[in-house]
Length: 327
Image (cartoon, rainbow, N blue to C red; front, side, top):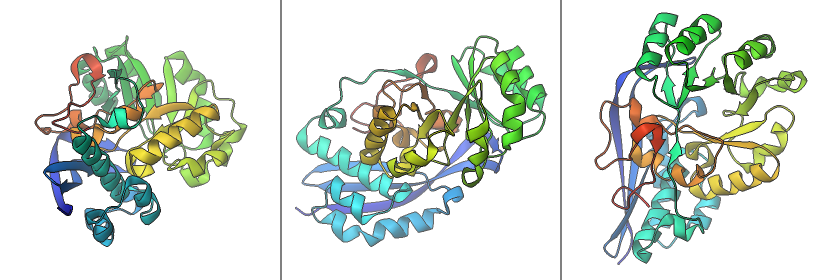
């Protein structure tokens, strides 16, 4: 029986508006693909991201361009050459991994040669607001072991002081989403270290980050928008201490695992992150997250409602997916 590909667009409302330096999000618009073959079904979700000129329409069009290959016998390795890195390839790559695991009656982790997956601490994210609003949200999340703080260039210390007061025991990471300058990074480094911030994620625009080379930051600097695939790593040395691996940037699990291995060999610390999506989008990333220094896979916690069954996020941990979800 030939493979059959199904592509759908879905919108998942957020529990509350979510603000970052580039704007406010109220729903997660995702593309889901299913690949069925001989009674087995693999599926996956990707999140088109406007920052990379992606829309649900453009991602669906990319997938449709390779429909014949997908419905033929294309394997994950062939998809890497047929499609560019990005959300569309992520959905295809992860759906094919899931299909292979279902057909072989095993797990994707086993196919990838990984040990038994373990739960990992995941960050929970606080969007941009007034200091009082962000402090109040931190109070709601005060028992979370790790908080990720979205930030722009305004009221930096007032906002972070409010969060630290409300959640004094939480580990902190800060993400300006390219909204700072190198001067702000240099000026705020000692303050961030003093209040216990462990990492500063993509503080300056990815195309204008040379200024980071001259900063001896006391807080680890992590590349996000500046990193997509392993081909980007050489240019990040001397500017960043860590890299944030997201499957919607790498174009799937295949490249994400290769990127992680190369980054580790080059001495980069590993963060594994996500766009805002459902548990189906997070599930493949749990394989990459094994042993990562920072895991930020809380996208489903920002939704009004997640898939059922979804991932288990008990006690600030993200637990590995069960086969009825993915993998």
